[in-house]
Image (tube, rainbow, N blue to C red; front, side):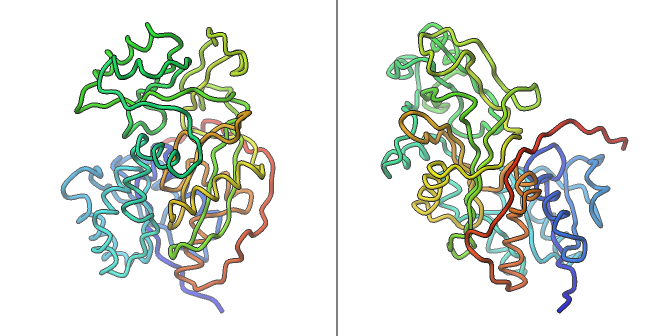
Amino acid sequence: MAHEPINVLVTAIGGGGHGEQILKALRMAGGERYRLFGGDMNPRCPQFALVAQGMTLPAARDPGFVDAVLDVCARFNIQALFHGCEPELLAYSQARELFAARGVLLPINKSDVIDLCMDKSRSSEFLQKAGFAPPRFVLAESNEQASQLNCFPLVVKPHIGSGGSKDCFVVQNPRELQAIITFLDASPDNRIMVQEYVGTPEEEYTVGVLHDLDGGYINSIAVRRELKGALNLRISTPNRTKRSELGPRLVVSSGISMGEVCKPPEVLNTCEKIAKALDVRGAVNIQGRMTADGFKVFEINPRFSGTTSIRAMMGYNEPDVLLRKHLLGERITPGFSYEQGYVLRSLVETRV
């Protein structure tokens, strides 16, 4: 039986973040199923050309942001709303009852899961307590506290708000560690995450585990990252330590991922257990590396991934699955099949 298209709003669709990825995935699902609307704070957003109606919205931290989005939802009879960046995720989470009262489906995790996962130190503590053995770490307020972790090389980054590896550094000796901690101005009000560097770039995975909004498991998928070009590298530096098992270069991703869509059993099994322990609702994205001691998780993102469109190309379309389940009432078979293979990325120019 044919249905009227579902009106879906995706915000923060510009800038190459996961909002653009969700938009791409929903477009792949077919124009008859969804009528897509898009919002962004950039009035020249190129992705406005890809939606039925584009509109300029305030920044997510603007006091009027939620009211502006609610107004768009009312004006265009929006039935489902997807966030496109982490500040929007926080804003929508805090206003979830307002959207529910308007009958707008908000496919996001519970507030406690969002708060836990967006704090890297809290998520590492959770992994540790739950028996998943994350990389060793300290949350440092000073050079003295940072020096407690003496297993170089180390990754140094803010424990909140370092998406895309912003303000992330690799240090290889105590002198570099002290310099970066000083540069980042560690203090009780600005605590810095110091984390053990693990594994090699060739064994880094970004993993999606999808549950429905009632908590039921649906499926999982992995992308083994190809970390070779300027597009997907934040840091690439020669390994000057004596840790030859880490490879010749120490690498940190930019957050723009591409590579091999695959099904490594130990990686997927570990991430499915983590998602279950978190009691995930909707999408969660888990990042880590396979090591001699198993899969080591160094980050959990309580949202859709920057590889959402890559997954959709292989038949694993997370936003489409959630809408079909919760708005169209379709039965989704857990562990449904999808393709495996390589998906690569490049820059695309748009004349606006």
